Image (cartoon, rainbow, N blue to C red; front, top):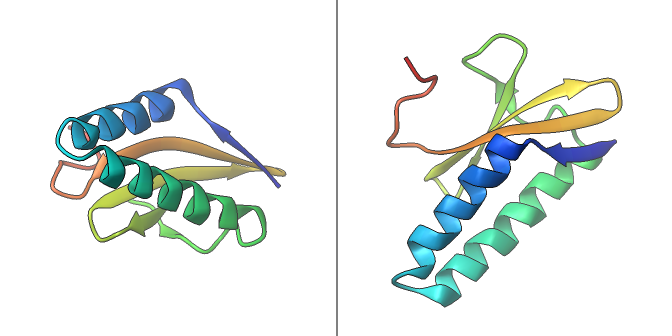
Amino acid sequence: MEIIWTPEAEKDRLAVFEYIAADNPSAAITLDDRLVEVVSKLIDFPTMGTQGLISGTRELILEKHFRVIYELNGTTVWILALVHTSRQWPPL
């Protein structure tokens, strides 16, 4: 399996990092490292997330506060979005 972050998901990831880093750079690095660690597990366990709210997607909850939205396409895991759990998902 290969993991590919869509440009939208990369943008989400950067926004989360920058928001947290503004107050606590160390926490931002720790969270991003944890995100990479959890997402990399999808290489071996691509169905470990629950069925997503949007048809054809799956979701992982990271640290109780972030939802990683992804889909499987052949041997590729597409990371579609990183959303704080307090936000509306799926978007209206």
